[in-house]
Length: 279
Image 1 (tube, rainbow, N blue to C red):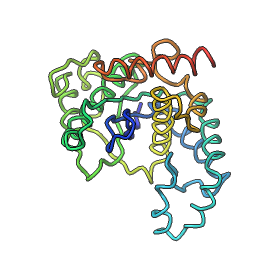
Image 2: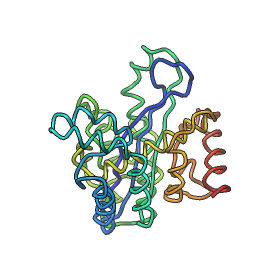
Image 3: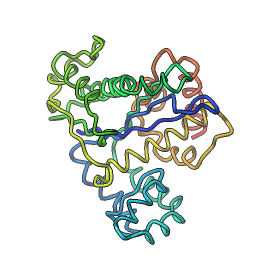
């Protein structure tokens, strides 16, 4: 089984100059379902162009990359079809078995310099929380092996993730000494290191990017009713894929650091309202 995890960030305070919450996560999929899931995404993409064209939730960010490849017209055309393409992909994967695991960590400051300085620690912390949930998922499912696949880190700085993974693998503890309830990753037949890939070349990392995108829009809506993007409705297509669905998603499928009490409660209430009670 593999956990494909991408990262993103968001602001929980209006008019904040820099994001103060980091998200990391995506899909956990068995070896048997990895190919069917990839083919489902690519078949959906083929209805709008070449199945290997790169997509992501913030598709406009790919404009320069498409221009560099000499396919700018494809980007312009797909931008006009993006709502339909997203829906096609989410509908296509909804019947395939996979699990969504997302971690979110709130930084306790509105000061730009402090948040920038804390970025490395927050990245390690959000990864640790997500890895703990994935390791528990592996303990429950007991597959032959487990792998963690991360999108290529910003600035090629992988140390925060590598250090955390090494501690969890050998000791069953975080770098801060917090026990992994699952035990050591080694005892669960995890690979001994993280694998890194570049999202433009990995269909399933692109899917994880889209999962993180809709999850972020849902969280923004949970914290501010006026923010209700396309992703809030689209998430209903795969909401039942979150680990712990329907009653224990917050804590199992969506991990929010425990000190962020108000944020965690708002997300939990809105998830139940939109995707459990109202589903």
